[in-house]
Amino acid sequence: MTFKNRFMTLLVGIYFGIVLIKSQVISWFQINDMFLFKDPYMYLVICSAIAVGSVSVFLIRRFEARTIEGADITIKRRPFHPGNVIGGTLFGMGWAITGACPGPIYAHIGAGNFIMLITFFGALTGMYLYAFFQTRLPHTEWVRLKPGPTGAS
Image 1 (cartoon, helix red, strand yellow):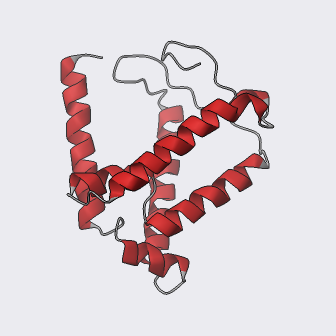
Image 2: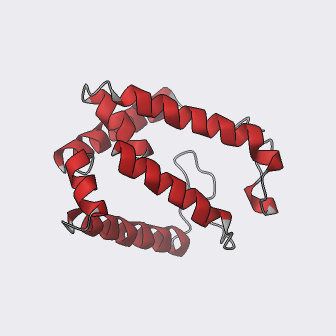
């Protein structure tokens, strides 16, 4: 990836963080109201994200889009796995307790909410624990990390 691509990625990330902050989707109060079914705002945001994602996937497939570096984009269908329910439940519980999922953690930290560093390190710990125990967990073959050009193993 060239310096220009990295710089543009940084700018898009900063813009995305500003959008998260200004739209209040990182507000603990908004998230709390969502989980208590007091306010539909977050559900509407999530539904609009699903709509944008669906249209994006359709367009990527329709026009055979490529990455910024010219590589083909392939979107594979994944079979259902019961572990997704367990993982999703754990994710939702962490989201409800901390008021942040992975993207907004960075926005919180960038906005000066440094208490979210605890959440950030908790997320990192969970990620590394999963990687450590991955070979002992029940998975389908497609979930297992394989060595590749990204260095994942």
